[in-house]
Image (tube, rainbow, N blue to C red; front, side, top):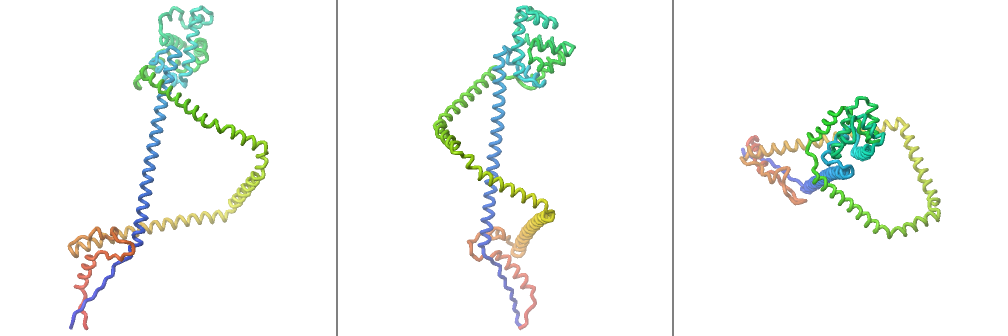
Length: 364
């Protein structure tokens, strides 16, 4: 009685499709990488835009403070405190500037002894001699605090408008808490951060002036570059008008308008057909369901394929004592397109030996 055991395995495949798949994956990764780079560039551009806007805003504010200080005679430090108080009262540096300029004129009237000025300051308990030797900061604060302590709201408004002009009405909200409240508002500004120094403000003014010069230069040069085209453009426009260009365009515009009306009408008709609309909804729902099913199937196959690879790797290590060569694994092997690839020789040999030892003897 002779023994014979036979077990043949063929485990190969054409690598062409596999390489095409790898190429598709590489392309996808490349596109994803480009998308990441593009997103990074967009984020960098957005950050630069935010930084530029912040820089411009800070420079504009400092420039406004500097120029307002020169117009009004107020110090830049006091102007920043007053600007903060004004902003909380829905006023601004423009209102403040107009009010201070009007205050200077009213104080001049007081020195000259005009009745309206004397009556207004007299109602506050102030005289011309009370302002002698004071700085513009001190004069403004002295008047503002005196108005703030007027209990009658109507009288307070009249005095503010008489001394500060129309802009005085805009400043009333910051004076409604009395002199102490007004002083506390200014102190709060200093608690929020350091004031800009006169040197920093002057630097911001110079920066803004340089930007203004740059804009003017750009505008002038762009104009010179375009100026040569003006005569030709003028001729084209005149020729168009003289030859009734719009009239010649009318038929085309009418045809376009008519076509748009027809399209809108057809769309409206379709929208009224409930059965058709229901069918469209069903169709899109079906497409969505098919897409979901396909995605689930792909995920299932990927999961099973990974499990199979892991199983074969474990089998190879158990049967032969050697781990499956990563360079020849199911998910990572190198072969030229069209080449028949034999995978996992050690795995197959191990399986063959185990199964052969357990086959019954064959009788001739």
